[in-house]
Length: 480
Ligand code: 9MR
Image (tube, rainbow, N blue to C red):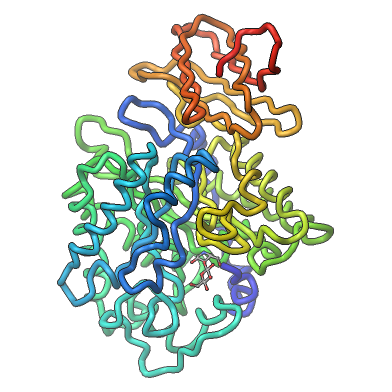
């Protein structure tokens, strides 16, 4: 969301001095699977097309999900859903729509993915020029809400501000809107509570406070709504992850967030760990506006990335939440795009976090030039990474110049299963050579390009794995 300009215009930048609690330990929190393994989630957003399609479904067919795995080796999708589709009339839920969502979830399940359901909104809802909220929950106050270019500027149309103010309670007219939002989430969560392919829920895409901005918004109505959704979802779904986003117009650009720590009721039961995640987006201004990654644009993007890392770590530490970058992307046809993708991947690895690239919609931002036809950025997005780490991750990196994937981890009590890494066929056409400082068993799935390593516990010693492409004919322990 390119709203730095807007943020300046409303005098917001001077007000966002969120204090970090210092604290720490966020990097010790990971999104885990049922075996306790740390999951590194890597995938796409699917999709912008769902915002306006007649049935609320994205453009993909099942074959596109298969193609996505075969081309990119991803293990994750941030799947867009909309409040207007879930609850088309007040209190009336469309379970046919949820069944259609479930069918897509099944397609991802067949390819071994995790699915994050993202309650998407841009510019509040269709009745004021955006998408997300149903018309019946949109009160523009009769004020103008004309679509602007770039689209983000529509956020400051008076009718849009009014609609947000009515939702957040800054205007007192419609407290029931938020109650409906909470209840709609509860319905979605009860529908998917037992679904093992669904990772969890992204409570609201790119929140915007209307006339209430900065820490007053994030610590006020935004945090309050998040807590209400968390509490309500936990009454029907004790286990899935619940992700929250900061106010996007500032945080997307590396500015601070004031989001407070949220309480997960599951911690009160039998010592279960909280499953609240922090899911900010990254859009340096040049990328957001479709620019290049060259010269001063690249300089600005790099500064934004450095600041983003600092701010995200502070917020995640305060929230004691693992991090998932819910969106990042750029017009991949612009100069330097492949380097930007490379640099974001390096940032993600250095923070040991996953991400969802924006987006799968075929076109200039996408790994697809057309459905089923990879674009120039697809081979750059197809990278080597650990999908699951059977212990406490210490470090991982993929050096694209030497094609060396390194993963370090420690044993962790209660964690079972293998450490799984994805080795893209473009970089590892003949498989990989393994170096590991200890005994292990390996399984190479040549069809899916996944290497699974089960190691012998080594108390007090970090497992250190390095994989490099096998050289045909070389006499070394290899896979593939
Ligand atoms: O890429 C999307 C663009 O085509 C749409 O016009 C716009 C409004 O619906 O949304 C864009 O996608 C944005 C997403 O919804 C939220 N994060 C930023 C994305 C890129 O601008």
